[in-house]
Image 1: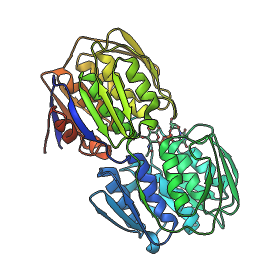
Image 2: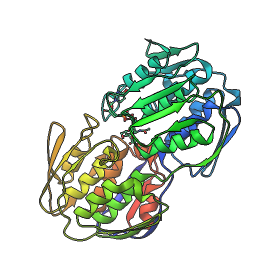
Image 3: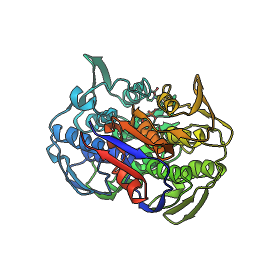
Length: 417
Ligand code: EPU
């Protein structure tokens, strides 16, 4: 298994380009299931999760190809309604095929994704939404089986804000008969990006990006060409690394509007941030100030940035409190940070972080995608060498992160297994 070695102590300097958003690309690639014909998507990040999605689509009978950052998907040959365990277990977001398959084929059989390192992650709200649209749902042998004669518009209230749940039901509802209203829908930019692509395909959707989304079903959709939005979590990770190393980094091709909470908190932590169009310049200042954060659905502070921000707080002046309200087990990086000398106490869903003068490099183990990024960030400000193991998590969701850090002057390299 590959590992990443980081020699700490360098200030990051220079310019870097952000990649397309994984969590926008996944549902958008899947949305191609909703129409016949050749869709072209550009700015798709080159990631393991993208490969897994294309593998799954190919299994369903969809023609897919990827050249550089351009992906072509043609679902004219869609002939299979089953997403098997072997493909779904690699990537939970595979559940996104459920809504489109039921809408297109009137039936689907999708393996239940199960929990993962960060929490139980049930899909009850996806299933409840589909039931309200008229699908009959049966759970057996580890699979969800959904069938319907015709999906019909419905009023659906989500008990919790769910990103992929909102996306799944929105994709089912675009081909349902009549009007669907989604209440307490996720407002994440990735939901809006999906809605924009669906609208380009001919769907009638209003209000995406707000908690109430209204969808008037249409009979059919047509293929499109569309670009994937910039990855706000990759951008936030690079910004945090710049602040952490007292560097001076300019991030290009970003969408600053999607990062208001992160920019606000980084400024409170003392970083100077200048935004100009799609460019964000971050200049880290000493000392780093302690700032409390609480993860929330968008536009709140993203849970996907919590682990990276914790590293910043680990070397800040004073104490900070980080509360995680989205996932019940998203502090798994804490024990690895403690091994690197961080002073962190976890009580329930809160972590009290007392800043220390320095972290100390150690062999550490990544347990999920954002935890891997967090450990690399910790390595950037540690004495000696940090060896981050199990980096396949990182490869699921960050395109060439170590190459980007190298470009910014970090002493970081990948050791191939
Ligand atoms: N939830 C339920 N029932 C459901 C659905 C969700 O109880 O039917 C709960 C979850 O267990 C969780 C909360 O609702 O406690 C929010 O989960 P959500 O459904 O919003 O998460 P998701 O859609 O599975 C997406 C991202 C995650 C990101 C979360 C939160 C994708 C492919 N994944 O997951 O990204 O953390 O939203 O913003 O969009 C990552 O990229 O590292 C990642 C984990």
